[in-house]
Length: 446
Image (cartoon, rainbow, N blue to C red; front, side):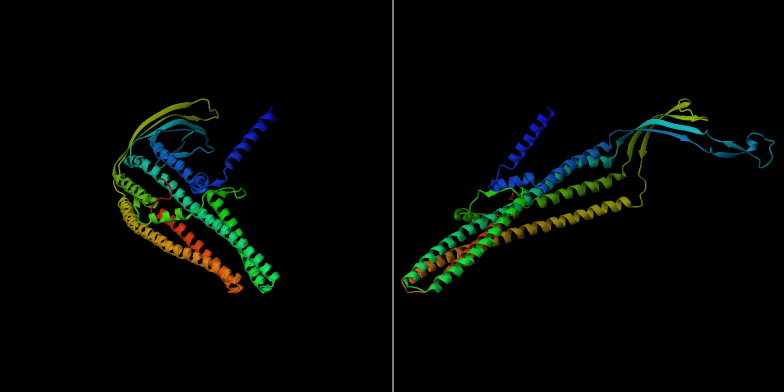
């Protein structure tokens, strides 16, 4: 029976693990969602939210009743001796004569229970008011982690997309080169061209094969990076649902006209929250001038016995205390503490102004990068078209005996360079788009 239960549990665990890895194809949005659910930094932020709740409870419970019990049993190996003037007992005693007395007995004990209750403390009340701010700060830390994860995942995803697109074009180039080599070999057999023309094309093909191998390794690396940023198992397979098309790329131009709003940036919101906490901390120091009131009660018993017997001679005791602590003079400590918080607020205000300007700069840089990227993309697109046309004409001239094989080889090389430049410009545009979304606080949905 036990073996059957263990087998069922093992099967259930395997099913859960299989389901967790079932999804292997991701869109950008799905990749971001997966990362937000799986990434350790996000999990740590969730733990931070739980810790914030515990901090709030810690402050709250500090003002609740505190009950403590205590018990102690003591053996006085040497009972303390005191000297008392003998005239206290015998007026006729000689001057300077003393009497020795032992105060206490060898065995003693204390047992009791006490309760302490804070009645009023202005600083504690300020701490209670800070509870919502603590929660807000923890929530903002979580959002910051999500934004960072989303940025890294999207950039890695675009990197893999561009690499895949380059691989497809490179495969077409190799296929076209194979066709050109085959046709040229036929011309050699017919005696129309020399074998060196085939050799030139084979050199070009070998270069393409080498580039394809490098690109294959790069694609593997980009997928590993994407899985790392997503916290996806490195040994699991992953594929991309998204594809790159001109219409989607052109839509990025519509993002350029928007301005940044500091309230959309989590960094700015975090600084605002930090300012709130600093203001509350300053208020806590300021209200330290108010008296605090507390209550304590004790109920216990004391034990004294010349012989070891902890079960007799216990004498009860109890006390109720209303305590009032009145601050009178602190040598200027509180004033210094308040002043330091005031300086911190000034620093936070200055930091917020710097953040606003940095957001504007990031936004402008991203917009400029997008404009520059599209200009380069347009130029490289035209260059690819021109290079493809030059290659087409060069082949026709070569086939008709009006051109040389070297012209075809050079045209192939120019086309490959134009393609590489195109994909480099395309990648720059996509990364600039991510930077713009980050600058405008739109990487994730709040």
